[in-house]
Length: 259
Length: 347
View 1 (tube, rainbow over the protein chains, first blue to last red):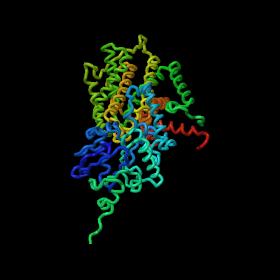
View 2: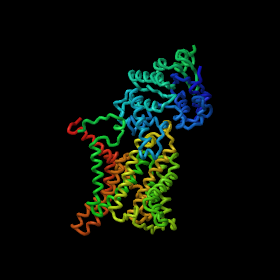
View 3: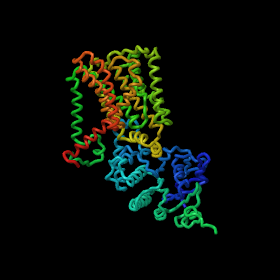
View 4: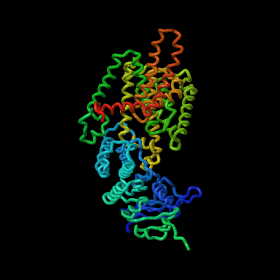
């Protein structure tokens, strides 16, 4: 096995007396679709928040590409190649679809304050190059040409999710963290999204870590699954392995009554 | 109805003024502004001058409050810093007017950065109070630092000159102000075509996810404060050289609130809105005054009743705007354009 692209080691997080995560460790191999599942309140989103830097864990480390990023600020982590989509969409509502996507590239652009005011020379070239690339590699790929100039607030839910994915792709991530990419979608939208996720993995060499409740999709497309319950990792393996794991069945279905 | 509007390059689609019609009207506006002082009288030129100064100030405040979402009640204070910087440099050190213009901006920007530093931790009402404190401190400084500001007597400034030419007359200074206003508007429009402007709007809309997108919140909030106060400082510098005097009561809290009203009436986060709001807030009170003046002939006593009435009407207009058009004049303009895009068809 090659070196993991992303790993968490002994992650422990508590809010006051509430233990949210207890000693969670796992490693994500490059090129995987890595799923985190578990009942509500199991601490799945908290793991993503620790990886993204929004929460600071009480103990444990986050390793990205072999480097300890536990003390790195969230905006610097984004520049290293960690992108994120959110469970309840976090697009910038005052901007158009195009501007939202362009914003994803922020950390990779160089234009400073004064060149931006002049919009001259390198600043202009950088913006036009960005526009071309966004159009040809992202908007075209996700099939959102028809809405590129609309404000995101006016879009339907499924499209907003897709724009959020577009923005994350514009960040040129090595690892893409997706929090419930198909929550609240109908079957057709879910299938579209699953196809996009597979394409992203295969065509762009992006490793995907996702949280999802849609078991059909998880079992279909993920390479590796971690199951969480009450802040602890209870199972870790291929979809087939975790499906029959007794702890997982217990967490999802409950125990058989003792007679 | 607009037809045949298609683009072949990304550059053409990224342009600010996209159609020949729009570019034509822009040049027409420029030409009108150019010949305006040749046709207008002293009073109209004076009105145009103070309106253009207000445009510079309002564009600055809109960058901070409308676009980045950081409310400021210290804008008049920052204008005052610019005005005093210019006046002191001219009277005590003999610095030419044109050099004091950027220096005033920088002095105000420095104050803005200091005031803005706590903004990483404060938002909304709390930031509002912090900037209010800055306004009060600055006003206090203008009044009590007698050796530098001459207290409430203020400072008198000689008529500005530019490369040996006198700018004493209204028309001459008009061109200076218009050029500064045009540059300010163009620069801030450009800003929103690049990553810096997008970062500002992202911070306003959702600061936490902006940070996860790779935006350094502290850096960009300070950028917004610095830029906004830079524009305020330049507006203050233009004002003092226009009026040839600066006193503390020219830059009270009342003026800060008036600037907030300008950008709300014009349209928060819109550059066109800043321009329209500045024009509205400067010209409408004057129009009301002259309109009510028409009644003076009827009865000499009547003015004592009508004079307070203009403030009431003006206040009612602002409330009306907030109720019926919360997105301001810029939104009305956008709707009118959208209507005529398809005219004479409905859809």
